[in-house]
Image (cartoon, chains in turn yellow, orange):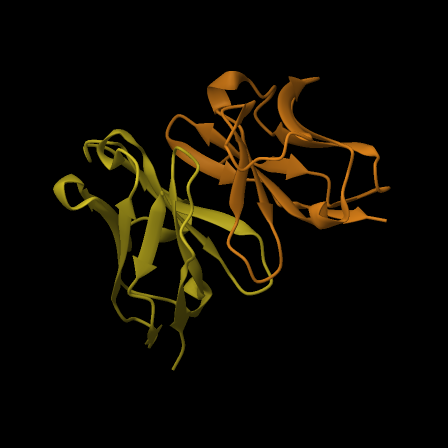
Length: 113
Length: 109
């Protein structure tokens, strides 16, 4: 059974830092693109970042460039999202999503003082 | 960054057929945009119905199908069921970057 399990979401102050993790199982992780997608309360889905299978290339939505970093550890079947200089408009549920179409259940991030 | 457009809302009768579309501000949608379609119900994570234009997962009901139609990606629901009432999102890939459509709220009524 395929599973993507996110963790690391929390309440953090503006300007703060968080690192999200996504642990994958049940599919060949090292051959799949991996994405982070977020959904602000009451809003639609927004793609945040992705990374290619060997970790040599990554892409970001403009609003997070320079603040967020995606990276992966293929031996650990995990992908991460390092978030710095967090802003209130980064508040959302963050989902891990694989190129093969599998989703995690999400982890909530709240940026507030 | 490209803009991906979907119908904000559609209504279908039980047993009826409806087609949702996904357009791109950059021109015609092709298989090179690797279109995806997702269903999301309130309080739940999204789930993938169709990937790479027309491929389905094991959990995708047979009544859903994906295609390219008139320069757009399309999701056709044939024989709508009450449980199909949900928000539907498409996704297109642009040379590495990804853009979601704004979603279509589908009502089965």
